Image (cartoon, rainbow, N blue to C red):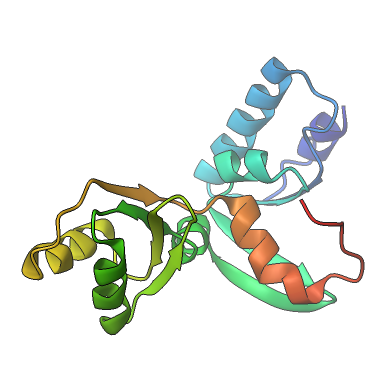
Length: 165
């Protein structure tokens, strides 16, 4: 009813606070479609929500505010790409890690013999490995989720923090 009332005046800007809370899956899909169609008409649709997975499916552009300060104002794809990494497995992981680090990549050993590489994309990692005659067993791009990117971005802006996950 709140969304219907907000649309009565045919607004150019629509502000929705937690519009899908309490809706069933069909209602969520309907609300998502409505918001996207309103934006496609040229309207501005501002949605405030704590449901990261829903925002990841709905939003095109994000504004993140922490402690009253603007932390981000960018397209969703840019935010999740910033946290992207590549999972790499190689028989000579130590040598590959040294090559990647030398090329400016952030390399983290996962503990199961794999490397989590930030910086270069999978193609660049594969090219570096080939140039150094290092065999690869796995090269899997991993996109950061909105939740991961958000938690990283706002880590210094929270007043109260949950215990370890």
